Image 1 (cartoon, rainbow, N blue to C red):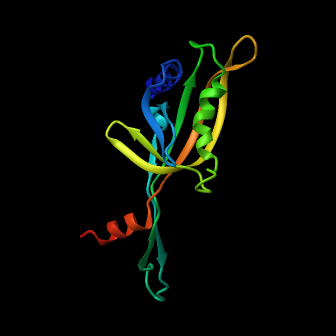
Image 2: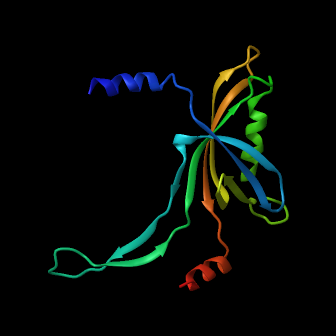
Image 3: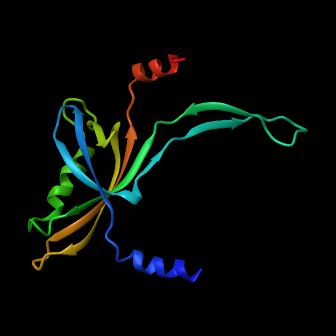
Amino acid sequence: GPQGVHMGCFAFFLPIKLADAEISAITPAGGTHRVRFILKTYKLEKKNDFSEISAPGLNGEPLQFVRSHSRTLSTVLYFDERATNTDVRQSMKNVADFMNVDRQTHAPPVLSFEWVGFTLKCVLESVAQEFSSLFPDGRPSRGRMHIRLKEMLSMLELLQEAGRE
């Protein structure tokens, strides 16, 4: 009812809830970056594929399991450098650089995303950056980064998991 409409207006002024996490490069061993993400944007997804088997004369199709996809984690990281008076693009670049291909492995680094009691071994699949405020000299002071992490499991890990009863 009308109560909900008012809550929607006020929700805009409420401070966003931020959670602290760490993103580290596992292979090759690289830096660890402390990040803050907007709690309500955290989304962990898992998907399975099924195919429909054609069976004439029935009111539906039997489903056949085809394959399971790796989990994906999407969230929005929040950066605010107003207190330090530094260009927010510098701290955002630290995370965005995890997209870069490493010279030795010829692939982007395998990462570990850690948030209180949850760890995801993953790769950074996509990054989109946006900025929301500027210092008087025009440098951006606050930014958000939409990231998508894809779970990274080796063939050995997948085989071990499949063999578990």
